Image (tube, rainbow, N blue to C red):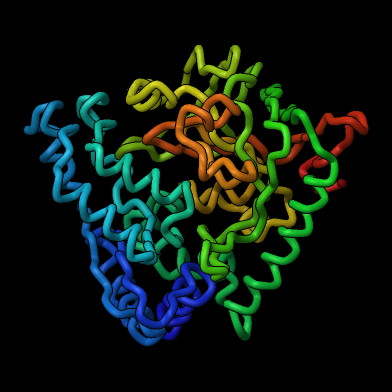
Length: 398
């Protein structure tokens, strides 16, 4: 129980950084009940005015996919959209507990229906990437997730790995995360100083060059909201990232970690890019789930994030595949197709969508991270000072 309470404390204090009088929404699966209760208790202890749990459940989702029509699954509800607008206006904090209890729950389901979502999901994504909601996402151990990692429901062993990755083994985990955030912010500042125009990932079957938007900023460690409150969108986080020019990606990438996508396990994913667009998809399993998500809207086939992670990451040093994107993306370099982060370009948040897109930012209702790094990966950056090494042999060398 002490470990769960330390987990909840990190989520509330270092992650979303709840302020007295603030409202909180908690998005969680029914499999996370015990952890969710601890997070709610920690939120109230930090001064939250109210905490509203929003429950999900894999078998219930399967029932909807099997029996509801595609039109019903994608139809927005006015009251749900209004609720999201009010959350944004009130400045609520958003917490998401991840850790898929059954990544095979939608095996055999219609992939198009499995990828479908109503407009309120897009609305919540928009408010999040625009920075109007202070948010954090954290992996919550459960038997199903442990089985994916170890082949058996050894939750204690998973807790040990998660505790290490989340720095729960330190005297003051929240303080440890603030220190790590400072290191990552320094890396972001070093990248900003280079004024890079493109980066290239190469090695392990990947050779991908992506152009960057002039004046873009690299973010590492955390963000600061409009009221000056610092927070960490992901715990653990070991990355520095930015949003690229969506029109520029060229080449191929090979995904080096499993991807759990809309209730499906995707293995051995390979993508080809031309003029920024994903033009070919192949995988050892689950390619149809990827294709279905890429067809959900016009922006889904373009990149919204490029990220840099080296082997100094605690997740990388754990030496296991977590089968959880939040953890695995922080073990090595990754990119994401879908929504960009407008805060990565100064002044872009205040622009209408059309002008953000003219800059090269991407608009989509999805944002899916895939890991392309690991041993042997090299990342170089090109700018007015020439081409420089950033990561070589999975080590930060900039």
